[in-house]
Amino acid sequence: MVYKSDPNAIYSHLRKRFGFLDWWPGETKFEIMVGAILTQQTTWTNVEKAISGLKAAKLLSLDKITKTERRSLEKIIRPSGYYRQKAQRLLSICKSIKREYGTLDRLFSLDKTELRDALLSYKGIGKETADSIILYAAEKPIFVIDAYTKRAMHRINPKIGEDISYGELQDYFEKRVKRDLVLYQDMHAQFVELGKNYCRTRPLCVGCPLNKICQYGSASIRRKH
DNA sequence: GTCCAGGGCCTAC
DNA sequence: GTAGGCCATGGA
Image: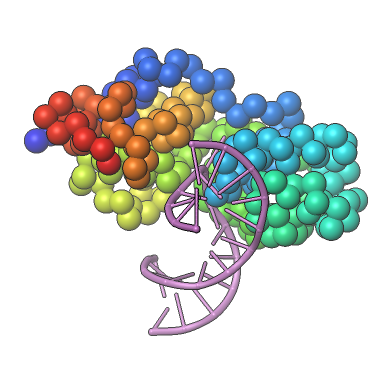
């Protein structure tokens, strides 16, 4: 059995179903960065509530947020979960950026590798969050891996273990997909859209756009998973 | 009531 | 370098 796990083929199936996803709504780079941190292990609808709160309080800028008390920040971002951790980390990240770079644009003007190292040095930003910020806020092409992408790739090609490391799967994509900002942005978005609707632990693969290429999706098997 | 979400950090081995 | 515990709200 040859598994059709070429990312470009997968993307073509997803794109056909979901259309181009104008993803990661955010009016500013700062808002996108904050969203990337708040959405860790959290649904986007909950993040939206927190972002709305920040907007209402006019705190959605590096300068404003660094002048905010931790307790009042906690209160505003509460709906996004882990709110004590996130408030503390968000504050410390913003203060560090301001101290070390002055503005977000200065930070984002670093080249991709330096920017990634800088982001990873902050407590509260791991690989996925760093790469999301680079891809959607700084707008530099880097492939974002998340739990949905791992799970989907494993199901499409069992040779790709569920325990594959972040870097390994990222290399897998970057070696095979043309290095293009909008393509990278949309491809990650498509995997998330897939993950939210199909390919979860329980819901079904009936109707999944990847049925033709997924090991669980062939017509003879077509079952819940 | 139970499960889980667009992770990451810390600690122990 | 990795498995397990922890962080927490809100929707299905």
